Length: 196
Image 1 (tube, helix red, strand yellow):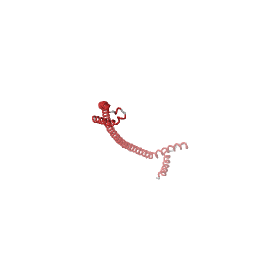
Image 2 (cartoon, one colour):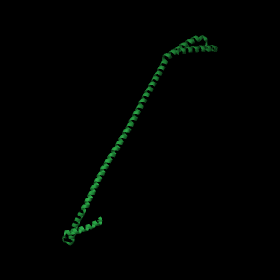
Image 3 (tube, one colour):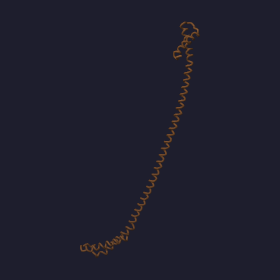
Image 4 (tube, helix red, strand yellow):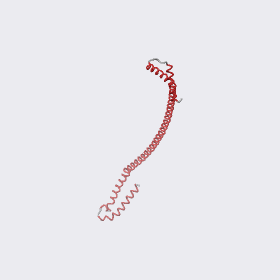
């Protein structure tokens, strides 16, 4: 390639010299054929030096820089691809962790709901049992009170009547007669209220 360029340069010079031969009569000294040999000599030396300088120093540095850039670009592309793959793997890993956490949270919430429902049902059943037992006890107490109350009321009525009559009359009255009167009155009251 370098030799090809050198040959093309010389051919160009010869073509230019043919054109310059006609322009010599115009008074341009560089177109005078008498100086052509020295001009070709210096031209060859200048271009040869320039060619050697470019081919030995400048072009290798440029090609080395280009190669370094190319290798750096390839290395950067490779590193970017590696980072992209790593980030995709991390994203998939995070998505899996999030999905697992979501499923785990759902399971915990469902378990907690079931546990809370069972605890509520147990407490509800216990409370209902306790209320039922309290109701049964209250009904029993009411029944006992109903059964005992007429006797107590009668006794209280007898004692109260005895004390009132003693205060009114000033003398003690036979307790059996007061009992009979109170019992008769209470029997009439029971018949009235209970429909007996």
